[in-house]
Length: 626
Image (tube, rainbow, N blue to C red; front, side, top):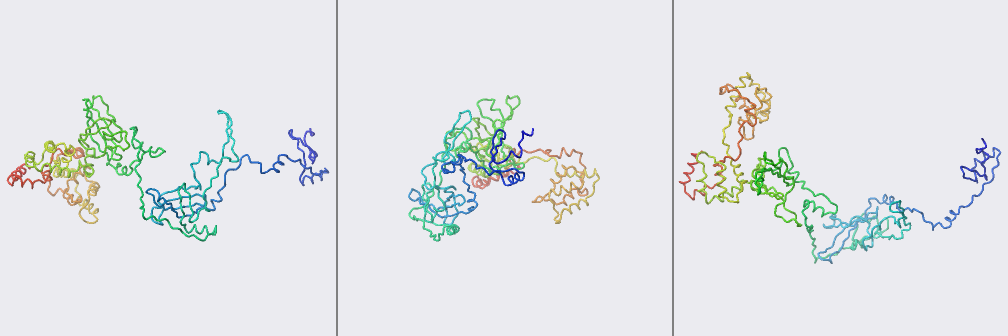
């Protein structure tokens, strides 16, 4: 079995060895092998010369004619980038465009980046030495000659000659190693930039006039140039420089699909982008606590169908984005469902052209007032009432809502009533009290003012001169009687300790504390009072102009020895003194005639017209009614 394996004597120069079907002829060995075999008594012949390879011999004779199969097409510019990074040559230049209509001399700033041989040109609109204003040429390699746009694929690193293979099978392609169809484009380099030289910037002749100190030092060290004499720019004094303002871009007509803003945004840019919302307006009218910035109105539908006229709607106007939302509150057994009638969106004014390039007009906050008519998706709505927040918001911002501006409304009413003030006073003046009902004044003013007077303006007058004619259920004396009865029931008599608590809070010894501090002290003194009773005590105690309370008044209010009062009947304090226990007066149901007449300020005109006797008779009548 040993004969089946190679032995030491089988390996020698000139012998052939077959390994796995392949025959190898040994032609030489190293020095160690030769010495080892000689010491073993094995003779090692001289080295044999190997036969020559015809392919290598061909390559050695004709090395230049052989091209690599896959030539390296990438250029390693890392060394140049590391050496010239942050080295920028800066020149001052101009482009004379005065020969054309409205043309002028453009002052330019040319920057050459040595790291990648790119050029950037910016235009200077300010005086000499100013910073660049806008881009004239984006940073790129500038070709010396420019004829037309390069064809597709001209900037590719490799050229495909043909494609082999079937449509469904594997495909093969052959690259052009010689780049036969490639055109060598020459670009401007730092050697082409000199003072007085010209750059052909895609047909515009840019003349270099001066350079900065770094550029002078760079050319002096690298090229040995020492003279840098700036040249003057052309001066066209007779021709005035006129920079035309950009005209508004005329968009194609809107077809009515989608929103106008979305369609216009797609016409401005190739890449579709969503329209931008007014973010400042959103931040200004965003919800803050209980201030929602949503104006809600109750509306009725105006329709030829009787069933639609009885439907109730809530129209909400969102000040954040000027959008409208309509919600229907269906009556029981009416056949309609309580649901969203119109989803929140901006609504265009009726009667506008659809196929036009001009942006449409939308409903604004000034269109929202009681009595206004809105057309939403072809449905006609009439605003009948508004919630208290909407009325109060419009009154606080009366400069934006003329229908809620009491001064403007009273000026308009004053002009109408001036010639007929005598008849108006004789018909409208109250006879039994100093207030008049809302309906009486409304009917008279609507008759005098005509169609120019809206329901919202009348409500503004009623809210501005509202009269609160109701008697409180629990006045100061009744509250004090309840308080003293509670103190007597629970045998509380610790006014000295309560006075110490007030003094501890009053660091400046002013004798006054805020409502919050007084409530905290009364609550922490373990008085036998409910929270509702403590709030009533603070409400009935007198306050100064800043809302502060003299705590001595509270102590006298709780002292049973001062003006003692009879015990009150037991009541449910949480129910009778809690929130909502007092009747809530609806503003505007009754109008204070004295305040309304005083704001009209027509007494002087009336005195000169009718005389003092008539005025005195009316005043006596008013005083009698009061």
